Amino acid sequence: MLVDSRHPLIVDDVYPSSLCNNLLEKADILYIVPNFENNSISDNEEWCAKIRYLNKTIGLHGIRHSYHEFDKDINKEELTLAINSFENCFEEKPTLFRPPYNKINKDNEETISNFNMTIYKKKFIAHPYCHCNPKSFMKPLNWILFC
Ligand SMILES: [Zn+2]
Image 1 (cartoon, rainbow, N blue to C red):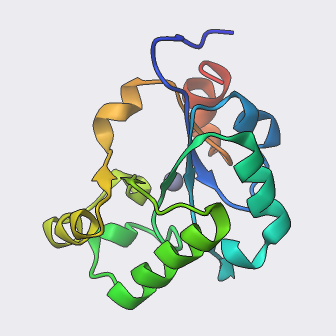
Image 2 (cartoon, rainbow, N blue to C red; image 1 turned 60 degrees about the vertical axis):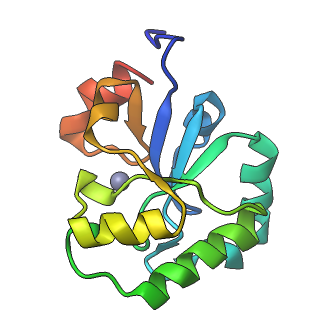
């Protein structure tokens, strides 16, 4: 195990159909995608309970995780719904935000701040960091080495 215990282990792309159960337990921070492929997390009570039971720090990771989602204009209504789903699911409001693909434009940065979330991007890449569903090119770096 090569995890450096001084740094939190971050796991991105957490949603009900993602396959990373063993990783969820090891992680310190889970970044949740609230509406992946139109499946709202709040419709899956069993999964919500499972994540709550893990008792990890959790944050919001986009809305649907579409390509460069937060580098484009986002629909504030959709964002509000995503935050509400998060709150229904985990019984807390999100306070941490990681933009999908590490990309967020100025307008969206402001919107996220207005929802009282702190934005974490690029700098965290240097820390132990995993994707639930790693792309093959990420595996040596983010999956095998750190997870
Ligand atoms: Zn992601």
